[in-house]
Image 1 (tube, rainbow, N blue to C red):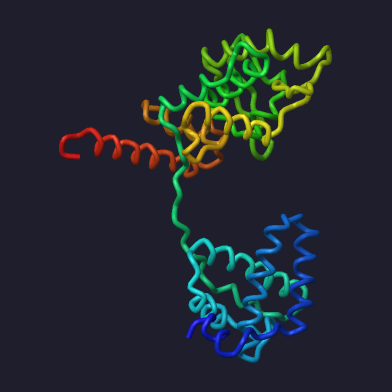
Image 2: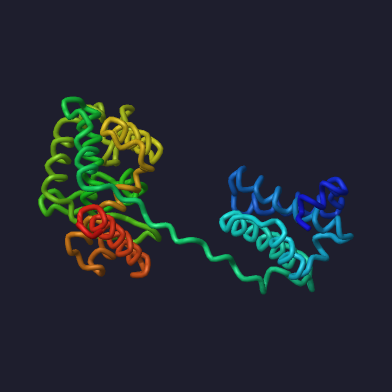
Length: 310
């Protein structure tokens, strides 16, 4: 019998008042500790209330939940893998919090296996699509010069969006053609810029940046039309706009697609995986290896499309 069938026959059971107070206290605690987004807190609340109702229909409360109860609840709800993973995350956090708050409380989630998430491969654009995207800004304008330089640099150097918009002017060594990038965990790395990207950067620095700076000396390399550093949201908006102009808006595009395309195209052209790891700033090689799967998938599609027996 499913959760929905139970409720249809008996009506939705009410949540025990103790459970309602406990859920509210938990949400207050994780909000103050981690500053979770309102959407995440609401998802936690709905998941915990659903479990509390299920337990109430069986005469129990959250504090009395056992591992077998959680397994039965998951089985009856028949959620998709991602929904199940989100629900388990809510339960693990809640019962872990209860265990910390109450000595001797037995966490029923400790021995429950985590669901296996389907592995999603990074999305990369084809090289012709990259060319169309990079060529979309109007370089006859101040903002077009800036936008072309940003797009070229991100694709040429494989930067994260946050790394791109947070670059200080001092990070660029135009003579050597390298950038000093501060990545995750505050780790610095040197990445090459490439001749084409460097040419567009020099054009931006000579023409557009002084106009945007308006006589001031801001530290950021890339400036908004207010003379301040760019934000990730600003760059996301301009990538979407140029993708539309380039005719590739139907794809799931984001600024990170440029980083994925950088990595995938390098591998397609024979780059060494260890070198790619250093360029991307990955601490573990396993993180970089996912791009080998992207490259293989691309080769399979190419074979299927063009081979006479594909």
